[in-house]
Image 1: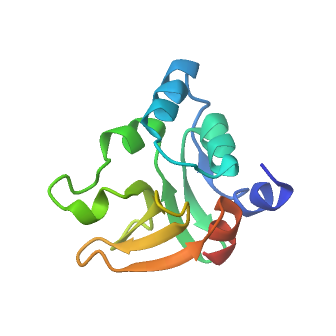
Image 2 (image 1 turned 60 degrees about the horizontal axis):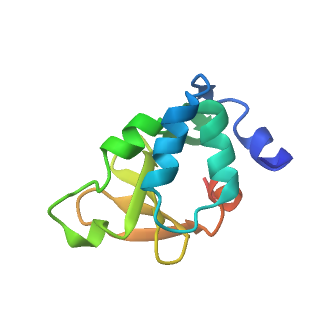
Length: 126
């Protein structure tokens, strides 16, 4: 992880380091090119919650990422997304599997907002 990411996540309540087998299970579920800094984060902390600047974020544990994807199993629009967190309210955060970009996704209408092309850009955008 970059120093910028470490600075941005310093106020988050971080989870314990995941078991190696659990991390490897996540890697087997990822069928696209995913940001290496996100993988470093999840391998070290297995999720976190709290504030990044003024924005609340909940970055899901590996268990939740695996269990909750696809988020809407009956809606094909979510099949190209890998959800990994939320703002604790009306929006989730997901990787777009076709581009690797990170999107904010409205839980109701599935409208999206580009939050960045990297995990660092995403955190900086919050």
